[in-house]
View (tube, helix red, strand yellow):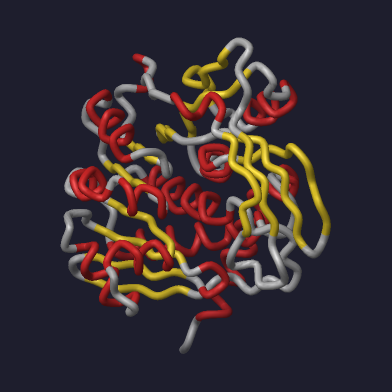
Length: 302
């Protein structure tokens, strides 16, 4: 079973208290795809310039990620982002954002992708997200992410999108901005009322909340002593979360969703241990299962 993911593939320049890296592999679709590939197949739709390093394309292919939907613009420049973190790594300071070829990104879904049963709409313009949904046929599950920019500038389109999706993934700051509610519990319940079947509110190092019409679940983050770079952690979480659900390939119970939340948290915990995808590149299935088991032990009460 494969997931169709639409989002950004980028080159990042990042500085944290533990070092600086220039023009490293980044982007929402990149982190999601790589994480999800540990659970299921991935079909990626994104755009890059011809300045994008071939080694990064090779890395994605090495995980079995299908790149038929990765469009390369001749003489174009790839989306670039530069940012830094202080010791409180919950918030990045953006120094520059150069959209480049991503500015005119208009996702066209390859014919072979249109029967995808699992779809992840990363945090692109909600009008583009809606356009993607018009191109796919009968997906079993549709998940979407968003960001402050679209909440501030495209809220009507975002509200329309929420009526068409199964899972909405958002971070705590975005949830408060979207609903004007200081309480995340009230915010999550309010967003649930806008249409999605489930809402996931990410809280960074403090875990996440899952809201469903018939349930509520709160999970901590996996405790990590050395966090080198939190960039992409939320997308890596989403990759593990949706990847696990796609692997099951069935009607998902509340129990399945809770297990998926834990797998998402496990994947994010590996991601923050190094810059870019460096830790994920060395990750094994055995390590994922061992950390999942530890997570359960840390949070279990007899």
